[in-house]
Each structure stands twice: as C-alpha cells, then as structure tokens.
Length: 109
Image (cartoon, rainbow, N blue to C red; front, top):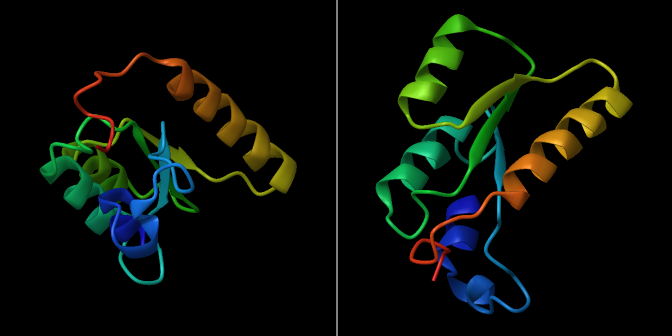
C-alpha cells in the first residue's frame, strides 16, 4: 500500500486528498512488504528518491541498521518501550525533516 500511495495509484491519484509526504517513517517489519522493500523502491524511483525516509524497529540489530543505511535511510530509530516516548521521538524527527527544504523536482509529482 505504501508504494501505491507514493506512486499516486488508484484512489491515491488525488494529491489534494492524498498529499505526497514530506517525510516517511517505515517499520522494518510491515505486513505486506518489509520496510526495507519499500525503502529500496523509494530510492529507485526519481520522484521519491529524496523523500526523507526513516526506519523504525523494536530491535537495534546491527545487520538491520547497516542495511537501512546502505539502502539510503536517513535515520534508524529503535522504538522506545513507552508510547509517550515513541510519540515524542516521532514528533521530533518529523519536525526536523518536514522543515527541510527539498528540491521541487522531486516532490512526488
């Protein structure tokens, strides 16, 4: 579903209703495709290639961390055990990346 959204396929074609994200968080373990699969796709598509993409995991497995950065992740976060801490972490990361200026040629259009 993430790839369909980013591609603007089907119902996601209306960018007024489904805007292109300014930052994306991917969980390493997602149901349909892994976060690594989506990250790989994002970095291979010019319209998405500069989208700040951050990986989340409940584990700090060194192999996962290394793979995330090799595939072009802008950051890797180990999810904290408490929901309030997770919210604060996500808010902080989002606020930083959402305010960054991005090239106009790569905004999901």
